[in-house]
Image (cartoon, rainbow, N blue to C red):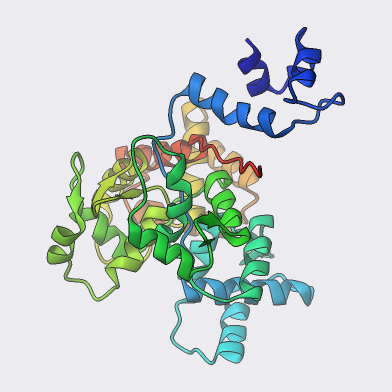
Length: 361
């Protein structure tokens, strides 16, 4: 009963409240003390089960460039479009061939940025998490690989421990030191555990997913032998890992998560030449449209409701519908089975619960 009260947040109403104060779980005004803060994750694990999915964050150097350019453009009062970000990246970092759209979508998928609009033009803005990550990168610019963050978050799981190489990667990225998470490490652990991701799959990530068995794992060495693409497999898997689509386990075993299984099924009808089988906006459209169709709305009406709910311009929605049909997520008037898989994946990502409350003792 007491644990449930801490889980709900109404522990102040307990008859035993004064005893909890005397035992140094809470202050007289109800503020949690160290022991009380420990009770919340303990209650979640007791009532809801152990942590089974290990969250992470993956930031490549080009993601960080995009992040910093978004911040600079916002400070100048702009609503940054892909073109403006690309121009600033060329100016600041002397880069010509970077795929800016891909890295902006990666930020949106990780909830470090959001999509917004200037008229009909797709633009981007930093989220609060994005601003904190940007502030951290200003202090020391470096990539943040998924397994470096997992060297911290994996310690909350049962019956497993991080690889030694993950610890060294965490130290190199400044996320750990002397056996403890640094301030930066705690930041990325909080982002990993609290952000509600949106799927983003580009062509190379889709091709990697097609090689991973649906119902059993594969060792990384086996996957490397099968990989024939030009893209860096480690970078691709780091993104998929941080997106909660695959889970790279200690021992170099790789498995699809429940979200990953749905995504793999969803893209099976998508032409392999498609540059972006799933974008964040496309995933949101399919999910919301499916909600309204399930409620019994006729397709045109469901599309109008979806457009209003998401705040997307009409022309933008038209292009998304065309893309959804090319990728076999939409038929003429309804979601296809592949579209239903994508909708399930989006919903599952929003429901995934991770426990991260860093207790400073």
